[in-house]
Image (tube, rainbow, N blue to C red; front, side, top):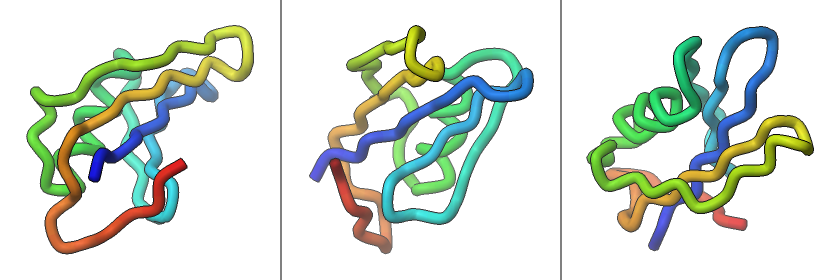
Length: 78
C-alpha cells in the first residue's frame, strides 16, 4: 500500500510526517530531503519517492508518495 509523506516548512526547517506514525524527519535544505529522510526511517528506498502535490499557499505543504508499505509497520493513509 502506498505511503504518503507530508512535508511542511516551519521555523526555517522542512518537517516530514506520515499519518499514523509518531516519527518525524527534518531538513533545512529542502522538502524532498526531509521526505527522503522519513522514507529511510520507515525502511523505504528514498529514490522511489514521487512528489504529487505542492500547496505552498496553505502552510507550505508538499506531498510525496512511496509505492511500498514500510517494513514492519502498517501506517494509516489519507
